[in-house]
Amino acid sequence: MERQGVALLNGRLYGVGGVKGGAPTAEVWSAGVSPAGTLGAWRREADLPAPRESHGLAAFGGRLYVVGGFDGSAKSTVYSAEVSPDGRIAGWNTDSSLPAARSKLALVAHAGWLY
Image 1: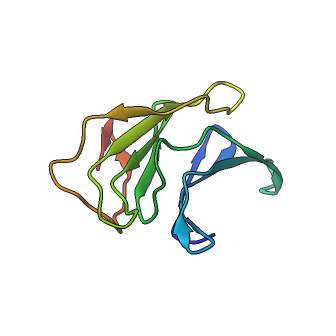
Image 2: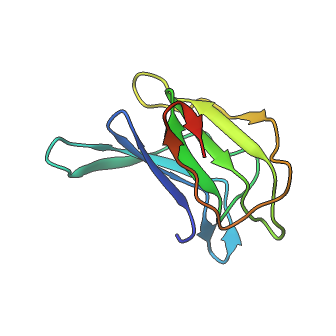
């Protein structure tokens, strides 16, 4: 797997999208992180609505946000998912799109905003 987004939220590490077998994937995986920093077993979460690679990913307010990315062309799509208290993702929402398509970007949450 390469060009995937990775974020930490409530003691779980999430790997979202990326390239698998030479093509963008919609797969989402998570693993618990122990206080010592070791990873638990990986489990499959709900897939993104569409494959993405080279996207921005950030955790904010109990949700994960996937912004832009690439699946043959740059995308303006924004997806978000609520993460349950046990760390599961049941599904993704399609939110307001970016004003222009973007790929190979970074996304960060700071002081109540996503940048």
